[in-house]
Amino acid sequence: MFASFSVIIASSTSDYQGLGASGVNVNNVPLWVELVFEIFLTFILVYMVLAVSQRKALQPFMGLIVMFTLVALILIGGPISGASLNPARSIAPALLEGGEALEQLWVFILGPIIGSVLAVSFYRFLKFTDNDTM
Image (cartoon, rainbow, N blue to C red; front, side, top):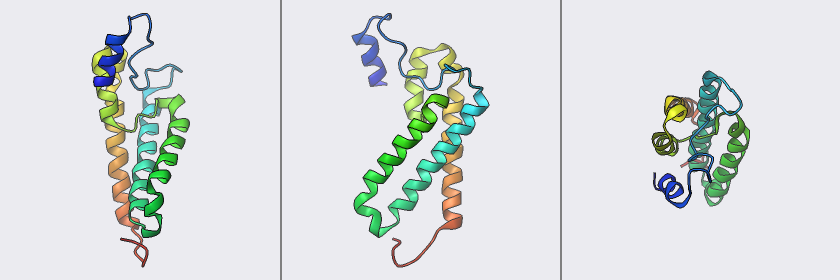
């Protein structure tokens, strides 16, 4: 919210192309495709965090692994859905921008929630235990 307000205060309306609202159909991508991408991308991110955080050998590299995973997911999903992966990141710009961004906000709230629930469920179902897990 603060970042979006900063853009509004620091710029005139002609200087910026928006406040960073997620996936405002730049490429005419259907909303259901954006929803599927948000679910899939969030699933991968949450599953990766869960899997890496439970491995003793990967603890020193956890930040790097998660960072590279997030960068890859943003590069893959950015052109399609904006790769929000986080409802909190999407809500403030959509509320301040209004219009189409606010109409599409449900995709960027529902997608990450579904993706997270699926990732946690899948991780618990497949949880591997050995000497290296915490």
